[in-house]
Amino acid sequence: MASPASATEEGQAEEEENHTSLNLKRTSEESRAAPGASSVVRDLGQYASTCGYCDSEREHANKGMVALKLSHEHYQALLDRVWRRCGNLLYRCEPESYKTHCCPLYSIRIDVNRFALSNKQKKPLRRLLSYLRGEWESKPKTKEEKEDDVEMTEAIVKEDHNSTVCSACRRSESVCKQLWEGLLLPSIRDYHCKCSNLAESLEAISKAGNQVRRSNKKVEKEYMKQSGGGSLAIFSSSICFPLAKEIKAENALRTAEHLAKSLVGDRNAKAQELLEGESPEVRVLDVQAKSGFVNFLLSGRESFACSCKASRTVRRKKKEDGKKFKEKSLTIEMMPSSFLEEEFQLYRKYQVSVHNDKDVNPEEYKRFLVESPIDYESLSSITSSQVPNLRSSTHMPCEIPKFTGYGSFHQQYRLDGKLVAVGVIDVMKNCLSSKYFFWDPELAFLELGKVSSLAEIDFVMQAKQYQSSLHYYYQGYYIHTCPKMAYKADYKPAELLCPNCLRWVDFDDKLRRKMRDNGGRLLTLCEDEDCQRMQMFEDEENEAKSLIASKRHHDITCMVYGQSVPFGKLLQVVDPKYIADLEGQVSKWVAACGPQAANMVYKMN
Image 1 (cartoon, helix red, strand yellow):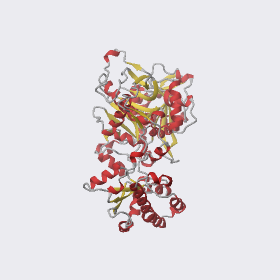
Image 2: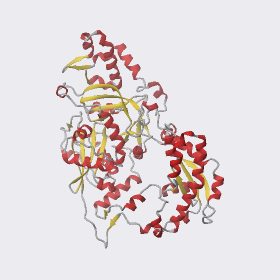
Image 3: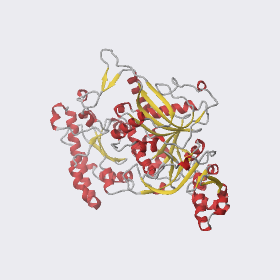
């Protein structure tokens, strides 16, 4: 789903809106088409769209088709061939995109039988449970707190606040200024002499002010662990990333790493002498380039121990005199996908507040999150009581909706009866496919996106007790080059779909390093020789030619003016000058869909 952190949905929303712009209203003829067929699609062939995950305006190639009807079995098979659904549109990127696309898309999933909850994922659950028990209430952030709420500790302190700032913070501010003006900015100017592309931006960078910050505790702990437990204060700069953008580098991370190493250069000797005016124990021990950041390793960590944090306003209203706040009840309800005004108003509120999208209308919402070609199929063979309820054995502090059938659903999250979030999902015989998640911006502090991912995993755990093959949680696409989508890799152990041989591969540390070293562009994820020989995805063009030669695609059922006819018979009555084009069109579609195409109906335009 494109959540846990809901801001991560922005790229997915933009990407899918690029696809829905093609589309996609079914005519009355199409709605009545082939009543006995389980799946009917209208081929769109290849089309181009821009990336919704980054600022690149470069277009990339996709293949698409409009599903008029679609069985959950066929959609499951298409998911395992890198296809994805947006309303009635099915789309996937073309093979060459994995070599040239700015943000290559890799299908990612989790086997719930292997899933292990991490300490990082337990944190929002503990926070939610504490909130439901009435142990604390949210308190709106002040303007000053919002400015402080960053990953890197702000070392720049406003002059009018000096009276409330401790000496350690002033020292941190002084060190940041010296590192920037005395070391890093001169290095950038030196680099500018070698790179004329920076000419226009150098002045702006100089005027931007101090670009060095005190690193967060997590970074410092990692460095101290590597150094054998030494006491270090780490100051960092991310200036290499905007520099990489200025020179229009295709791979920003790799370019930033190269720039960071170039800026470090021979500055270590000068850095040793830079802070002589500070306390005797504060010295620059080393300057390193890591993951695109320039990091300064300083001794005397105790000299930067802040004593003014206690005076900051606490964001939570904690219980006083042993009294509790009002306890709250969380419920999750599940229903087949349909338009509800209550859900749309929450979606509008979410889009305006989180994505600053003020042009939200019901029709676009329906096309994006309500319309679905997958018909609901109930589990008529069992009663509701036969489906187990999971509560104590799962992650969530509330009951999970019962597994009642296959299709497209909306899961409603309610707090004391009020709708606060909606998860849009598809349920098939092998998996739950997470599509989108939106929530009440007033409850951002609860991180409901992260909570919803665990709720959906719990749903799969429950469903597999009835349908043993249903034990996968599909998260959509993983994009290595998009930081907003990086959270998907936190749910472990994860699997990625190899675009070359269409096999699921463990996304282990080795593959992560390989992905990083290749800038997120890998056509082959498997390492065995079979993958190199198969090339199912890459060689679709050859497969299409083979189909034409063998005439195997002549058995495909086509729909023309509401009538079903085998493709081979259709060719017998078509004007000969159109036969070659029709052969190429249908064979490419069959190659892209795989074996299940034989059981689908191909609607002719």
